[in-house]
Amino acid sequence: MGCRRFVSILAVAGVFGACFIGISSLSQTEPGGGMSLLKQEMLACEETFEAIINALIFDNMEVIGRTIPPLQKAREKIERAIRAGEKITLAKNQDQFAEFMKLDDRFHKDLNILLEAAEKGHKKVAEEQTHKLLDSCVVCHQKFRKRPSP
Image 1: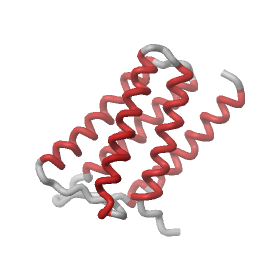
Image 2: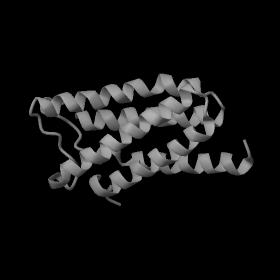
Image 3: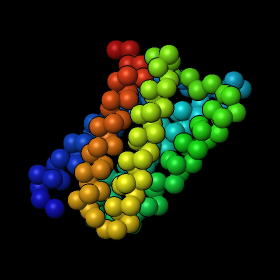
C-alpha cells in the first residue's frame, strides 16, 4: 500500500474517531438505567470501524467478516423495538426519524457490500466502501447528533 493511501486511511480513522468523541450526547439511557438501543448501535459501529480500518491497513480482509455481525445484531434490536412500538429517541431532529431510518437502511446495505467485497478479497472495493460508509456516518451525525458543548 502506498504511503499516500496509508495516510489517507489514517486521516479517515481520525475523523471517524472524532465523530464518536461526542457519542455521550446521544439519548444515553433507557428508563431503568440501561444503555439506549441507539447508543448500543453507535458503540458497535465504532468498534466495527476500528477493526475494519485496521484490517485494511494490515491487509487482513478476513477480519472484516468477523467484526460486522455485532453491528448487525445491534441494528436488529432497533428494528425489533420499532416493530414492538417502542420509541427510539434521537438527540435532535426527532421529527425526521423516517429520514434517519432511511440513512441507517442505506448504511446497512452499504455495510453488506463491504462484507461481500471483503469475503471475495476485493480490497480496493472494500476501501472505497469504507470511505462511503464513513461519509454516511458524518452526514447522519451532522443531522441527528447534538454537538458537545465547548
